[in-house]
Amino acid sequence: MPSIGAALSRPLGLLAELTHRCPLGCPYCSNPLALEGRAEELDAATWARVFNEAAALGVLQVHLSGGEPAARRDLADITAAARQAGLYSNLITSAVGLTAKTFAALVDAGLDHVQISIQDSEPKSADHIAGYGGGFARKQALAAEVVRHGLPLTVNAVIHRANIDRVSALVELALSLGASRVEIAHVQYYGWALKNRATLMPTRAQVDRAVAAVDALRARHHGRIVIDAVVPDYYAKYPKPCVGGWGRRSLNVTPSGRVLPCHAAESIPGLEFWSVRDHALEEIWTSSPAFQAFRGEDWMAEPCASCPRRTEDFGGCRCQAFALTGDARATDPVCHLSPRHSLVEALAEEREDADYIYRR
Ligand code: SF4
Ligand code: FES
Image (cartoon, rainbow, N blue to C red; front, side, top):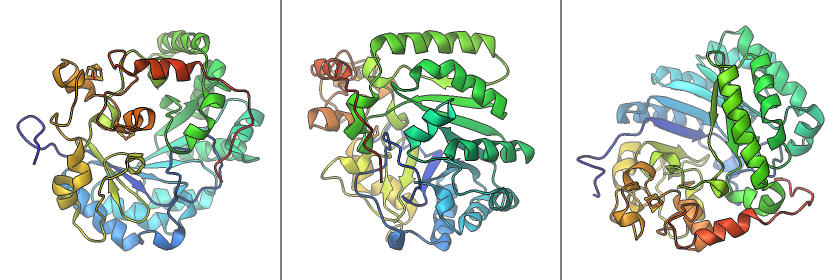
């Protein structure tokens, strides 16, 4: 098996995609184009086994995600299973579908942390972006419940052309909701988001203003809230170390039990994914073809193969490399050293004021 340094590393985080069902229609949805249906979803007992296997493998944290995880009626049972396995549980939710009562059941089950996605600081715009009337008010209500129960709250704001000029207001909103962390997360152009790329793409001037705003906000609110933000891919000089490197730090389990090295891995053709229905998680981590595909450095081409940054960014994102060049082994074209970097520069200039194509 290819090695990462001296030995195969252990995963720290597990993204448990409990369902692909979701009431929202966000135009930047990063879930795959072909969603898995309710009939294919793993049951709570299987999730419990997966969590135990994950803990044995070294995983410390499970992200209960979707779609909207609250669409699962057995979410409290699944949360309890995470606690029993000794995992720190983080609920990633749109807040739609969770009432004060159903949320209290999750707290009783041992939930540790909540992350609520917020589409904008202005209610009308937020509901328009989500394609769901009344969603903003529900997020405020759930945030109040999270704080009332004494759980730590993170606000995740996906940023694009329509809301990037309100980064400051979004951070102020997160503070007012009682969040201890806010993620300024620029749209990643995978899955459904590719359909809306030209509509979502910010301008260079907007990105520069947002970067300056985040610097000022960090100084102003130091010690009050942690602000996570990076320069958006299409305007960055170097790519991000996507998922901390392929098969190094994390794994994703889809609603039906397929185990992926990253959220968008199914967009790369030809990869063979194994399922928790057929294999133990450790076997999948160590031996499944999809996890082996881009581990280590053997697969790298130039300029990555001889670049000193290859141990920091691992050549960038494989899914983005495939989406933009058709070659998943290529240097992520976000990198200014990539021979295909002009592709990214050209796409960053493509903007269109069209209606969103909502995820339905
Ligand atoms: Fe990273 Fe490859 Fe660019 Fe070097 S050439 S900075 S390893 S993406
Ligand atoms: Fe798949 Fe980046 S999203 S490697």
